Length: 286
Length: 263
Ligand SMILES: Nc1ncnc2c1ncn2[C@@H]1O[C@H](COP(=O)(O)OP(=O)(O)O)[C@@H](O)[C@H]1O
Ligand SMILES: [Mg+2]
Image (cartoon, rainbow over all chains, first blue to last red; front, side, top):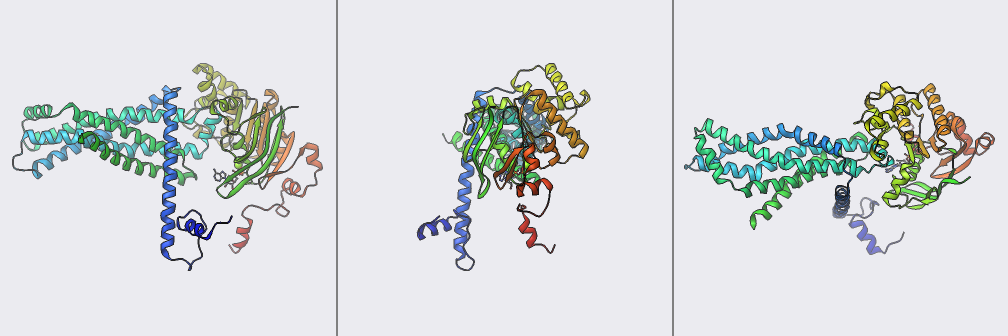
């Protein structure tokens, strides 16, 4: 291969080749550029691969056939078995929120202010986001480890040779289950989070229970709850997709599966927070 | 006889590593071809290319005269339906009990009811010499030899026309090796299937090969039938058949170990 000197330089600078220039001939800045170049090329390659993966998953979900047994199994694993984790997280969050508002707020603390801020905070943000983050840890990791192990032990190859599409058999059921379950879990988180605030307020601050409940009900609107549930649908999709994606492309034995699991949790968590920001600004700026 | 599988000039590269560099190979209908070659010579890559799990950059792979490289997925599945594969490490689905593994294709694609599928699993396991007491065990609790046999039962459960075996006897004791070799031989004769077996075990070659091919450095450098194998004087082949370290074959990683010879 022969390149002009200028393009040769560009290739080196942007890290398009693995050929490293001899030590001592180049400054540190070239290495830095090469690193940045490699990073961006890697980033776009990943983004492209992920887009194709999502498109393939979408096709599998739309076309069927549906493996109802697999979907049911995943609903139990992803939804039902996550209930305790989500409930506990939400209960303590609601309680802590009530304490913060009571002591950190102004002197006019009352049943109405504490109850309304707890209800808003939990339903709009904390219920779905903390629930999503807990599931990113619990579910994304489990999915990535399971599918990653199937990849490195050739079970995914075996599926294909048995005329079964891994996207339809493995990935679609997980994505469908997580996307269905996450809003239900978020609704549970809403109820238990508000209940956590209620317990702390009535037990520690001596608030009147009836007034607290009444003002929560008066203050909450349908939009507060539905916006949180819409977010949760998106989070469920992110959680399953990142678990499946990282597992599906894992390679290199047990270590590779470990890396896939870590990546799944980290990317799912970051994407949940980023998507939450985006959706909050879309839903509430109008 | 007509050719069931034909590879012409197949190339497969990973990054900068050229694994297959122009493989030419054909298997006739009803024939048992065995491909031998050292570890890392690209045997599994060749098999996965034929199965459509890897996509070669160049060349042609025909099954029953149909070009399979770049074939649309639904057409590919029709071809997959008549192929069975025994993976190097079994690749049993560890979330499913033995009977669901063995009858997997029948359940997923042929609409077998659970009881029919169990019957099919019993029959298939019987073909590989296993009893029905295994049906509800999970793959994690099977020994290496049983794992291979269940894998074999799964590969032949739907009476495929073409069966692939990737190192069916590696890691097994000599007795189990002989058992598996006989099973392969019997299955093939019973089903009348075309088979392609990969191995680096010469006893398997002698037991099951109608025709043998040697893969070295990404190319088929020798092929012939049993008599030709016995009479062959090809130095590469002889080194492999007789299992000697000295000879023309470059062992993978030899330079590295020679350089670090002090350790
Ligand atoms: N998916 C892959 N990515 C990169 N390299 C691979 C991959 N699969 C196989 N290789 C490389 O190809 C070579 C041949 O591998 P393989 O066909 O598994 O050998 P064997 O003949 O022992 O079955 C090895 O050097 C291996 O590292
Ligand atoms: Mg191999």
